Image (cartoon, rainbow, N blue to C red; front, side, top):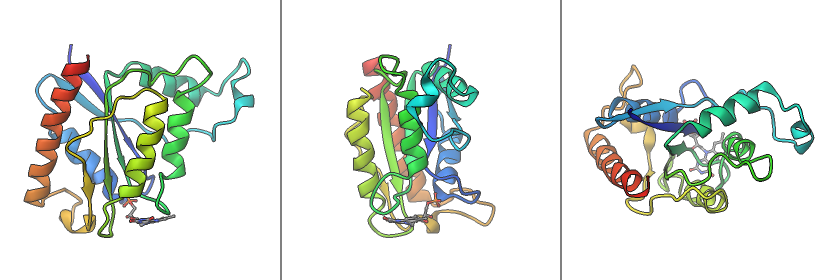
Length: 183
Ligand code: FNR
């Protein structure tokens, strides 16, 4: 069967640049892989009280989806030099209840982007801090900080800038090797 890679986008905005990057990644999934964007905006804020016996359906479904993945890819903007709350919430939801962390052991990678020049460096690394704890081994190299991201798309929102396409194709090639080394 094809390997399943879930892509988690740290922005809920309709015209999100990060989602457009994620859409491009879906379009370049290697042979033998299915890349799929996993929605996170429907998840209630994590609250341990919700996990006392009868968790919300959104939590149950999301945990089931994550547990069925072979690998995970995070594509995120930076909010105030950190990880957007909606993405951190998704990390938290699938890490609980205690002892049932469904991220556990899944190979991962992080791409950050920004309309500014620094490319979401802060978000990228703060996310990696949580990935250590939930035991998602995140690919170290190549790193992906996509700065001045707005310049990458055509009017229909497709990622058309050629050097970014090449960069992302190389990134995904490395990610594939990383996944295959660990699975
Ligand atoms: C931002 N933005 C931003 N950019 C950055 O490079 N570093 C930062 O710390 C922040 N902080 C920040 C906070 C908040 C609350 C918002 C809404 C935005 C700008 C950000 O890069 C820009 O809005 C991107 O377009 C967000 O990504 P999407 O939604 O296009 O994927």
